Image: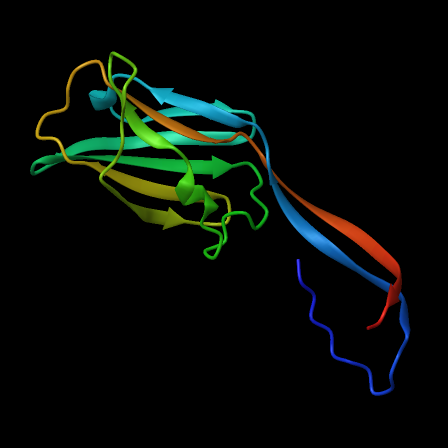
Length: 156
């Protein structure tokens, strides 16, 4: 982490003390949310402080679209629009042999303080039977402030 400070008007040999705080967004253990019977309709699963909702699976031409929402009980600012880590969460279809089928594209469909919606597109004309949709995400996100003090910083 770099901290840019303006040089003081008079030359200094040492900064006696530099204090401040750093805010960290810390993910918890990654949990696996597995949805079966994809054409059943809306399904919801909760693990720890995270809830994943499979809103809809629908055919669109020669593709299948899977719409999910991730909600944290208290996301802090972890889902702010400039924080796109959540879009890197693993999401795939899992066939009967355990082989993952990765999505061909994705897009954000919803973003609130504690919730994000994502649509995944799988380019396949038919949806094979016995597929599961798997979504992996931290079960909790904690925002914590850490105070620091650095003493005796010698100047060049």
